[in-house]
Each structure stands twice: as C-alpha cells, then as structure tokens.
Image 1 (cartoon, rainbow, N blue to C red):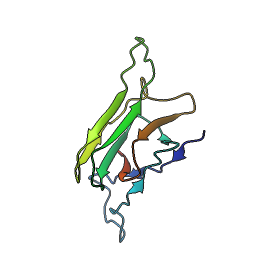
Image 2 (cartoon, rainbow, N blue to C red; image 1 turned 60 degrees about the horizontal axis):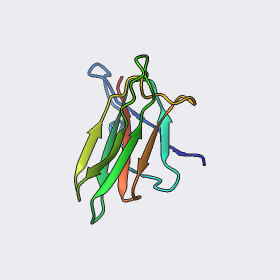
Image 3 (cartoon, helix red, strand yellow; image 1 turned 135 degrees about the vertical axis):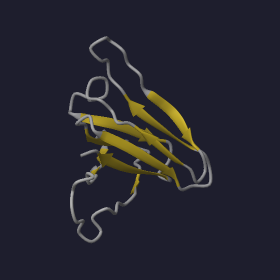
Length: 119
C-alpha cells in the first residue's frame, strides 16, 4: 500500500532577508492513519505532531538499521489531547528507507502533522 506523501516546509534561515507575505506560514496535514505518510529524507527534517482530537493519539516513526546494525523506531508515542510533540531532526543513517523517504504512521487522522526542513 502506498503511503500518502507530505511536503516539508523549508524553514527560512536567520539571514534569509525580507520574507514574502505568508512566507513563514505553514499548514497542518491530516495524517493518513490507514496507509501512513512519508516524506523525503535529507537528514534535516523535523516532524511536528498536534493532537486535534478528544482522545490520546499515537505516532510511530520507522527507523532502519544504521551502519552499526542499530534500529530505533519511535513506536506508538502518545500525544495527549490538544498537545504538540516534536521529533527530529532525523539523520539519513538509521532513518532513510530504501525509497529515500521517512515513514510515519498515526493512530488517527486527528493527529495533524507538519514537516519542517532546516535550511
């Protein structure tokens, strides 16, 4: 089953100059609890998760074996009602899947996601 892709918001650096109108704004994406989500891994991404629902929701971020054969999934991390959680950045080693993406699974679409890419 194909995962629903997410597009990272590239953050502006401290020396980016004048921002265009709405240049620093971002939107939340409803997570795909059935198929999961993915985004391109460059080693500079951060995941922000917001539980917009009325129950605790969980997020799982899949890792892969790194050069030392370590695998450290973030498994069913609970995000409380109305709370925000932040994960990353994720280095390429240990997180990039064979298709070049990072995989994220949530327990419900009420867990909203925003992916940020550091400059």
